Image (cartoon, rainbow, N blue to C red; front, side):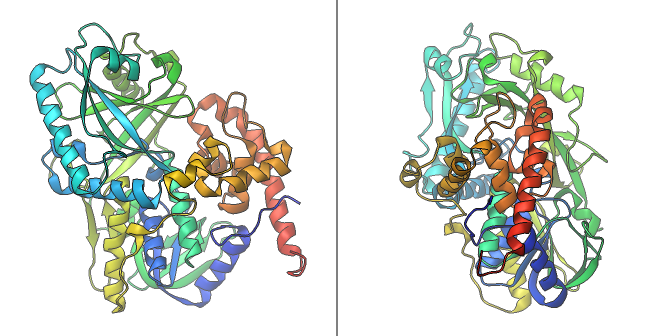
Length: 525
């Protein structure tokens, strides 16, 4: 039988059904609406404080903006360039927690190379180096050791080309290198947050639409059955770009951040993230962000939009042209549209502070806490999700008149362990990057079921066993859940098309196995 050992983090159809029953009959301390990084982070914060917690999501975990980031854990360098020291410090502090304790299995140090050439004159080079040196000060203040994130250094032209072989060597007078954080996968971070919250007792329910939000109750509709219930508990609106749908007085100014995907080999297989300055925008860059599996993401744009699809916004040709034109300014061999094998974009849920361009709107988050109204958490960014969640659940505790301190700064997520321990995990390196200490469970599943130990599509590093694990343990219920969110196969368009039939087969087999397991008497299971 296709099974894995039970674990308190597992999200399964049976657990979902039990959660809906409890939501219909019991009162909760807090009901978090929205299954992105902010909502999942808030659910973990609340559950780990001992609060009776539910997380409900209309579609799936990480269905919206949270899966469309650049997969970076920024230390705030860009915000320093804009003079926003508070956001820069918050970012550096949260980066330290993610890299050090919360998710060292999903977050790793990554070098950034800033070419010094005709696009970055001597004066701009000096200003940029000053900014990176101030970033080093923030790193030190956040207690991030230099062995984890080394200080800024200057590179010779030859060294710069070793790290980023695709750069134009002519007129290159060297480069600056600084270090920041990189996520293995932003959607995986959200999934692991939700699973960890479940381990602390949170009820996690996807395919559950929330309407009629009030301060202490919400109508929930199971989109699989159409049945509705009234759930009771302090309501936290953490719905990202949809937050204004439930808080009419709030103005959200969505900004589209687009990326294109290319094979790393067309860039000479870069070892570092490399940058290209956006003309006439001080401190703003387009990044070439290499991934361990042979892809490079090039992004990103910052364009105001209205009425775009918050789940999967389209990447317009104008954004693709902008990214290619900007990155080609620093490349020896220019990229063309023929090199682009995938595209993705997300909408940043920015809170408008004044009549300003979206690229200049603050990345600070906003918590609305008004008597008789649901709590609303808006704005912010992925790196600072934990701090956003802490502020929101602090407000929940004030409403409940309870004292329950936040625990999440030092709370490891499911699969997290120390970096030396990760190197000793008995599983392939790629699985360890994605599952951490839980990687042997996925590896064992494929060893017991050899038909799962094959790629989901020719040339794709993702294996069918990862899809099976996503169904058996991570709440995946559709092919889209499997290929767009639990794994990122969909980022390469040709692989996505080829992977859909085998993904559907794995989904059917695993859902049937879960049904069979539920049907067994407890003495047999």
